[in-house]
Image (cartoon, rainbow, N blue to C red; front, side, top):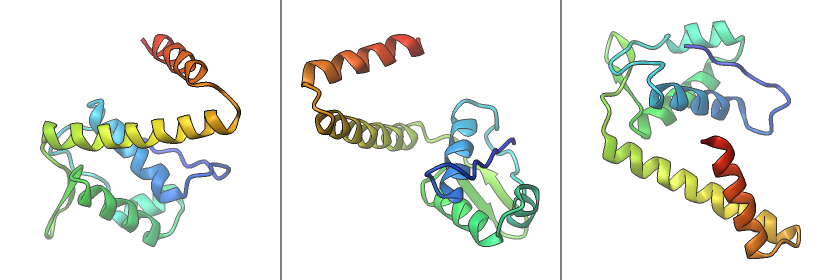
Amino acid sequence: MKIIIKNRSELPIYEQIEQQMKAQILDGTVAENEQLPSIRQLARDLKISVITTTRAYSDLADEGFIISVAGKGYFVAPKNNDLLHERMLFEMEEGLEKAVENGHNAGLSNDEIITALRTIINESE
């Protein structure tokens, strides 16, 4: 598992870890039931606080991406596609709401915002 921490990011470090781990789980880079580094090992590898990695793992477990097995560590949870779909849909909707708000604050019309979204969709295909 590869995680890159950007000190200049607006996101807190635990959220950077969460986002990167989610992405790797969803795209299959990290397989179902694969064991993850221990909280302490990940903290050492990233040169960050154990509290930060604990927060990231706790949030990922709460969201159903990883599970804790007593005495063995953390593992990628078996995929519950409905749950993952709902979580990703929720996150997408939050991002779109923020993007629309930013567009309106910048003085863009709804048509201009929609055109920008279509451009982004076309570029990602």
